[in-house]
Length: 117
Image 1 (spheres, rainbow, N blue to C red):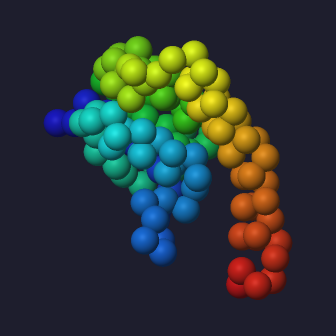
Image 2 (spheres, rainbow, N blue to C red):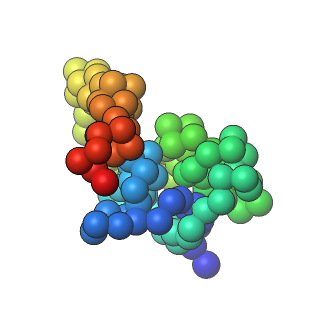
């Protein structure tokens, strides 16, 4: 049995999920070498009412950033082991920019722009 069960939205167009946050979390699990199983999730069953969320043992955890922090604590952090303070700062900048600014443009392109339909 896998150490982690990931509950997420389905994929399409060659993507593991249509959600950027689900994709982020699955990418982290793969790159960090965490043994996991991916399943379709239901936001109504999620601990914070949205996907992705994970089950680790009997514990359900939501929010992709919170989950990554928990995974680093629980399984170690093989991806950041050689990074210095500057590398961490650049990574933080890239993550915050993507999640808090580019994300809204993606939503607009997907749901508002008629060319997406």
